[in-house]
Image (tube, rainbow, N blue to C red; front, side, top):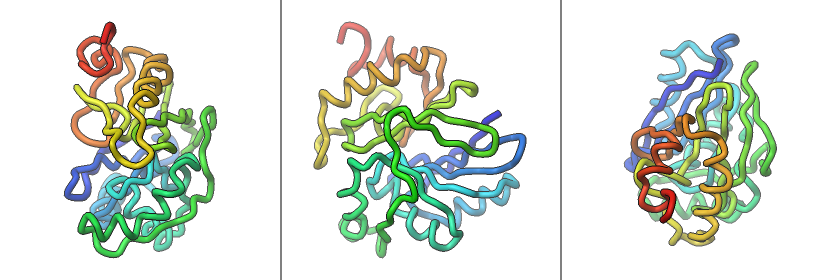
Length: 213
């Protein structure tokens, strides 16, 4: 079964996630935006072996530490979708603009597309391309664990911003309604910031995407 721990990182309190397979203790880290010593310490505490880096999208608070972590630990980077290439190329500039210091860009070992899957140990997660916040944003979904790691597509009570370059409000709403809701009302989602919620709760109460809005 898939297990996970949230490790908030960076001044943006981004929900980096360590996900692992209970059967093998093999692990991936989703969106290592920074504060890499905290992430590595959490992995040691959990007794898991980091083998991969998965990226939802290439904003600085989600991808700022990926290049360094990949280089130092020799971990392959998977994702996001190629639509975020320009954000990856601009990571050093993002780092300077937001006070992150020296930040490395990177080339993913594997780009992701809608319908792909990723695997850690014996646990397989489906990949959905969910543009709107960024053009190349992807979401990782474990039907078995009823969990989805949605980055900045959806939050408890809110949705991702669409005023950054490449953002598109209509695309974001379509991504949520057409690609997240079918995952099921009882699916718990882990957003890029803030508390977890369920898709059912957001369908009922989220003013941006609830039924009838």
